[in-house]
Image (cartoon, rainbow, N blue to C red; front, side):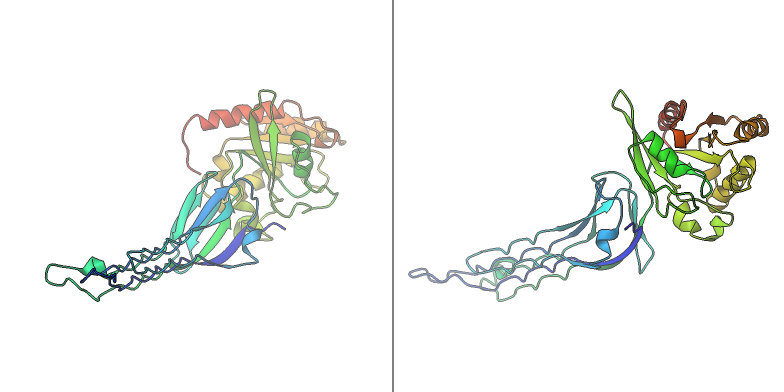
Length: 338
């Protein structure tokens, strides 16, 4: 099951209480205060990992609490600090405070850790209050409470290439053709209900990640259908690949599809349609596809966008993998913001 939104409550551990104690030993009069400090409570930490692709593990248990610090004891024995708890989230998870709306962290890198709830400080034992005039203090401090927060987690897929297209354009079949991913393929629209990420491997052992984004329809920017649920996964991709049905199976023209897809992306997020892209002219094995390809080239003659003919169903993808690699490498040469 793919889950890209979750709300959880996290509670850090409370600090342990300080101790009020006095040293007692035979033949040692006025032993003095020897109460230990309390230990700090455990933190709650979120860690980004590539081994998770969904937030599904966080929806069955929505409450996470770290242990409390141990209390101080006599003989200057300090309480032990409680162990932190670490929750794994997929790379690309955005963490916000549900109450204030504050952005806490964007987990865009594998291994990144963020402390979302800080454990309470341990209380001081009575030796901490000793002075020249008060050599037998009976004061001690209770431990401070740990931080508690309610968090919203939203996963936005991070991939080098995002496959964008209408339902039934052949995106899943194309992902199968270029990678080892095996998304569901069927002859009806909306076969893909959540993003699927595949990996393209090259002979020199370099890799590209490719995300199969569920099909878009007109009005997606207004959240028609599952518009925002799909579009948010395109935000993080480095390069876009518009997958067009050149056979016009659903009665649409490929150049119209491209115009509508660009419009939906731009209306959803300004500048998204201007991201480096190429066009995958898919289903070239269908009748009428060759004629539509020439018409598409004529429509885009004034634009510096590359068109790559392909037939994903038969595994004929031409130089698509090499062209995608070159575009991603060029894009990554200079810093950019998603």
